[in-house]
Image 1 (cartoon, rainbow, N blue to C red):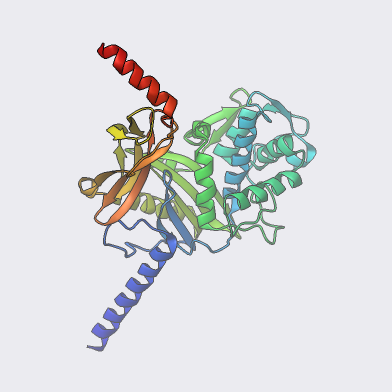
Image 2: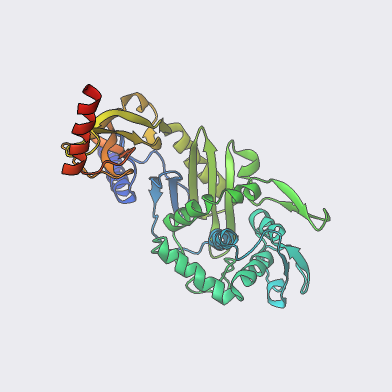
Length: 389
């Protein structure tokens, strides 16, 4: 009986901790099961939906830890933003500095004075986690690694990454003291990087080469080859950080981000990431709702009697099996009065499951309606009279 009581007590304690963790993580709660389905063999972990940013699983998600080369997610984000803004071109030829060439760890052995196109250097960073290539790109964008790191920290603040501070662009941590981030913050910056679809042209490549095929590259992310739907994103490992990954995968429109920090070895890291992704794909799906138009909506006091409403399509996350439970409610504001401008919100479409609103989109006017003045009313009466006689 003592053993049975101890076992039951342990189960209750685990369940209570699980419920608390999900409540803190902002997990989608459209169903009734709020317990953790399993533990992750790592110091911290997060599973996030890319489309909505919803956290589906979390373990020590706000604990600041060394991220190793997963740091380069932020490095790459700033590089992609520099390309979008025209500050850097993929076709730009960059020259390797002595400092960049001196980087240790993962590298493609760039030499001082060597030149390489920006797109080739990005390929080296994403596929081979090349530190020398990362610094070369950072120097091209900001003039120095120090200036680029300042921009990294500023961007982290903008994104609400509250547990993050960068000291370099590579994640090398032998000489760092405060180079830290959290699993949740990694998921946040990974999601932002994923908005730049160009990154997947690099992160989904298993093997490639540079220098006219003379130097081979193999993706450090083995999930790209061995996990169905894998799309990226970045691995990292040092003795201080352990084994880390931001692993992304997409199936049937559901794009997930699995972050693992502080795993004991590469295999444990990969298995933990796969377990999170498997859990996400097994339990969640994307509900797609098409846009549409409403019927006539009366407008009082206007030079037009009515407007039509229109609303965009949307996508949101639901638990598998709940797709048929989604209820769509079209709500139009009462007593709409002129003036009404085209694009004005005149109602909303609410997507609910039970008594919970999962998603809401605006209904907007398809036209403008001005106030009916005495002069306009007089002209309208005269026209009606003339048409009658």
